[in-house]
Length: 140
Image 1 (spheres, rainbow, N blue to C red):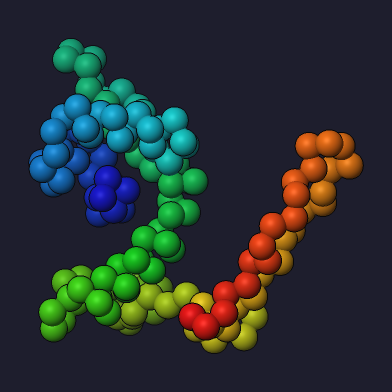
Image 2 (image 1 turned 90 degrees about the vertical axis):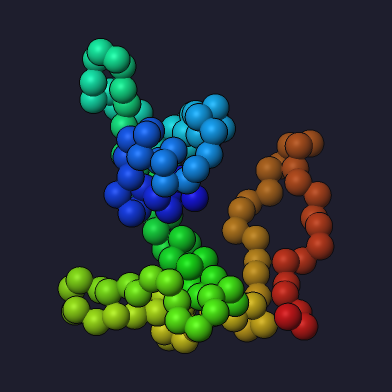
């Protein structure tokens, strides 16, 4: 929810706390973890009293796709009637529903249509990962 609010424009601690309605210690912990993971950067905007803002990093901005995919899921499964937000693509001016599609054929990605394979080279030393169960989704 902290990341969602950042995409809606909240950058400062007080704004985030007011919008989310969570205790300051919980928000501090979450922001510290998100800064440590490189999702936000902590930047001072006032000296007395010390105040900070938390803009998204490029890594954080890259979470937009997964976020709107989850938004779509919520619209499909939790919204009663109309979705609470309408997304508009600024470049073309059209409202849209987020979709996760194959970048090759542009078809929607469904679990039942997927297969997976590992993309790593096993190490030749004794720490080599032991083969596990194949990563194949069936009957989904």
